[in-house]
Amino acid sequence: MITRESPPASRRPLRCCLIAGEESGDRLGAALIRSLRRRQPAAQFFGVGGRDMEQEGFHGLFPIADIAVAGFANPVRRLPLILRRIREAARAVVEGDPD
Image (tube, rainbow, N blue to C red; front, side):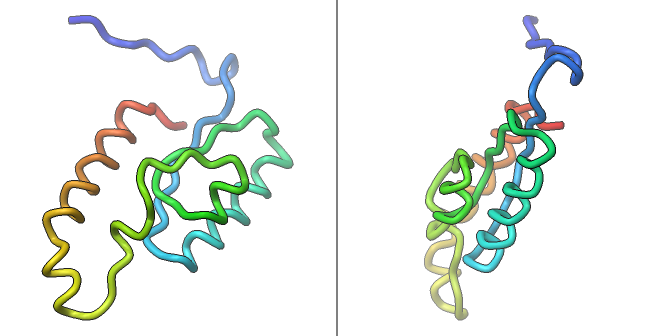
């Protein structure tokens, strides 16, 4: 079995995975990214977020609208997509090897 070995943390940029499930989380995530970039300019950010986070250099896995649902009937109708997106995000976290 071939495994990918990550370089030591001291030799690679900080890698952060963030998950924001709706717009207020997207705004908070963008502020966090800005703050961390002041200390770690080469930091890399990926995961689930929206437009505000992407404007800060965040790499989103899929549109936040896929999982941002409200009410009772809408989440039930969209459950297959939501579950698929959860699996995709979990896989990306493992493969992305965040710090």
